[in-house]
Amino acid sequence: MSDGRRQELGQFLRDRRGNLVRAELGLPPIGRNRMLGLRREEIAAFAAVSVTWYTWLEQGREINASRQVLESITRVLALTAAETSYVLALGGYTAVPPTEVSTVEQAPEHLQRLLETFDFPAFVVAPDWGIAGWNRAYEGLYARIAAVDPAERNLLWLIFTDPHLRKMLPDWEETSRHFVAEFRAEAGARLGSAAHTTLVKRLSEASGQFAKLWADRGVERFASRQRVFLHPVAGELVFEQHRLVPSDAPELHLVMYAPVPGTPTRDRLQMLLAPTSVEPG
Image (cartoon, rainbow, N blue to C red; front, side, top):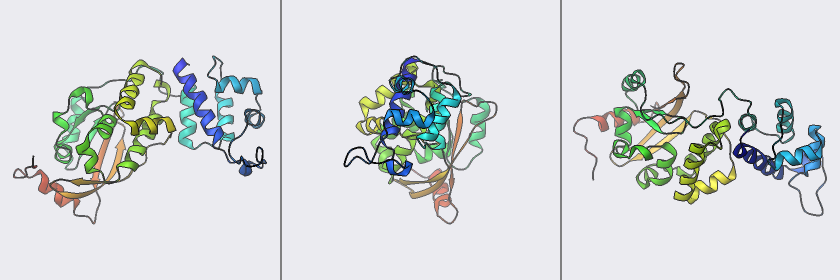
């Protein structure tokens, strides 16, 4: 386990330990008013490990933690399935090897051809959340994508640094929170690599909101959900966001925005893509 992953694992466990409600575990308050948080010795007792060993784990020391022990700790901390997967990935128990974050500048030709068969926005995301390909409908939704410097053509970077995109998202606060939590969950074994560390550092320096969300250590698995955009030409567009993993390119994700039935989204999108549609400058 790399030093970066050990430190992140320790900090993550400390944060979650501090958020536990003592009464829910049948424990009395600490002192007169402290209702939240368990002591390290309490977690160690519940997880059947020594206090010293658990203390070292939270301190990020170079110790070995078995999958079984980590799973026991996640149960004591009442972690979600996504958070449990994250802890296991930090411990090295994951199908994804702890290597550098892959940078894919351009989607394979067969995936690009697949994108073009969709009449709704779709794009390909690399492991570092770089946007490696998109179709005409996505460019109609987000006209600036082709002009963005390839080095900054990253979904997280654009969400937090492009004011035009932020203006299109009426639920920007919620969307950005989901994205950061999903990105952290997917980082797992790659956390601490040079490329990942550089990306997080750049984002934290460029956006105080990102820095705060990253420090909160939210972890979520991706879930299909509704996405709303306020397009400067087409008006309100309502989609269902879905994500697929190509079996022959599992390091890439195919993200699709399917128009929600019962809304004028599909008609407005077709109008937007008509040759006469021109976005105002």
